[in-house]
Image (cartoon, rainbow, N blue to C red; front, side):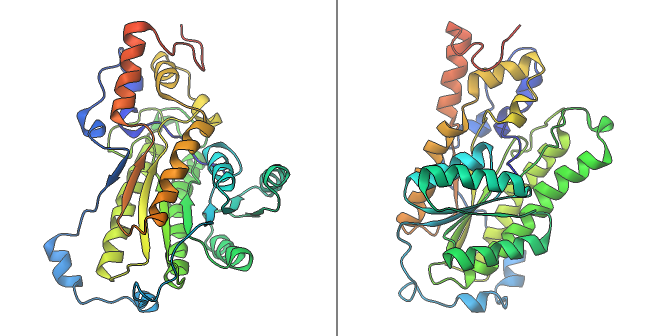
Length: 340
């Protein structure tokens, strides 16, 4: 199962305006690797201050007792048989890491594994529908049997049901596809990843991929998708708070923002003038995005960082520059799709 739509969250609304206004300051004050943590309010802290989850007891290793997290890293990427997930897998393999790919389609897994094997040698892949708890548990077991542990778990699987229409016209099947994949599937994966990593001497890092709507701005024509991606950021913050409350120091949850990626899903929505404008101006191929993201992801365990991090590909300066170049000089016009 491949990842879903990756419009930059702060620009999703602008796709439907007559003329593209300057991007909102909120998004563009965020650096490409912004470290952030929002602690729970004092009421929550006071209630939970002495709370120790049974899970937390399994990670009582001190920093001195833990194995250092040094490369090569063991990486698991959901929804990684095509699109940005597949590009990330290739880039980790180029860096010498071990990678497990998965998808809900056995055929896509087999095809992707064969392609990667031809370029990088032996490789691991398995079928997994992230919406099914038993599938994800089996994925963890598969990872432990083949790699023993996972250092980096990237939750990339997502869906927009390839549907761009007002919510009033959405079918029950489309809504269930989007919500169960992007919310339920993400929660199940985070749950199982945390449980696994708590028992690993090296600990681990979880990266949740955001998308259009994650900053709370509207996403007309794919409202359900935007609502689910808004929940990604909230879920990650909640996990960070829970792990801190439980004094978990060897598992860290992060957010990952690939910006606009020229996946099949994104290109299938290039049906309006505004959508075509922003795809041509801001979108990049999955391979280009992965070449930037993977070194930044790998630098976190390499530096021994235990702080939550938000890694963004499309920074404010980059987006402003590309929009300005387009408006002033006509740059990047008709780059991927022909504009009327």
